[in-house]
Image (cartoon, rainbow, N blue to C red; front, side, top):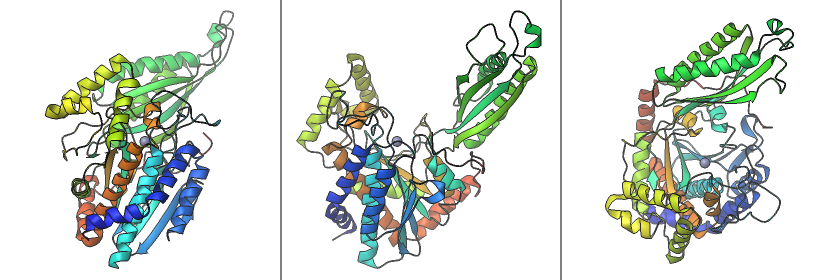
Length: 477
Ligand SMILES: [Zn+2]
């Protein structure tokens, strides 16, 4: 039996357990830092499978670390299992239909599949260590609250990933591809202004308006936009406008800002200038300004060595083994769950992305190919805490087609795929691909050294966490 056949069999042997984990987490649908049932089930299954489990690591009750084996290479698999608010959806249904029960939340980003696919990968890699008797340590990190809590950022900052030689993760999507695009680094900051209240008609001269300060800050930042790099993004929301009475000079206000850019250092540069603008607004209005760094994420650095191994594994195993019923369901989703305009926009996207194969994918909108490994893909205009993981260990990222082509993330349609044959088959394939890639690192330990040298070259061995040391996980929000 070759390595590929070994991995297919190793995952197939545990298929019932892997699907049970996926479907039960789908039904639990717990949002960030409240994944108590999901984490407990995950931990129990890992223990049953011979892993040593540390629960509640790094101050997060739903984070965990499961370890098997010893020695190098130390291979990390990063699992997520949090749901999204208000996206409860009956699996497999092509119309918006809440799942049974009272829970309003649902897996609109497919993290039930993500967690279970990582479980499959860890079981496959463990089986390979057992079979060969080779040196190697498998660590499955349970990383809660990806959607709002940035657990991997905290773990990277706090040294939880220290000693790892190579890290893998994946994400449910609509294509089979190794993800080579970077993501945007991001910080989230609250700016607060403190003024002096007074009667707006009788004693306006006595007042110092915190609302004026917030508004002037917005004006200043909107002028700043012209003089920052075009790939940066700055967005804001008013959190406190100082009250509802026009005849009272507002004594307090708060504006919540996001600053995003391709690299973490660019975010820090722009943030300094946004802080200058806020100080200027305070000076102009005679108010006091304070700011609070709420959260932050680094950009994703895709590791070439690890990504190439992942691509070879993906090509060796091929696309998920979809059958006729999967193709029919994808057709239903594509043509019967969106508006006419959305469908036309999807078709235009397919024509742009698939060239000669576009007609085939418009007729059968389920990705049955493998995207080539390309390093010229544009940046993804979103952010993920995998970015911080990628600064401290060589990391690569895969997606498989767990959903119909063009299914947007964070939608009920994405949620509806989460316990279907499409989702299951693509998730199992992702697990096999990750396990096969891990086996390559077990067989060829020098690959991990190459991957680490590449990361060191890229970062100079430096990682500055965008979240200051004194800020812990925001468990209650
Ligand atoms: Zn996600």
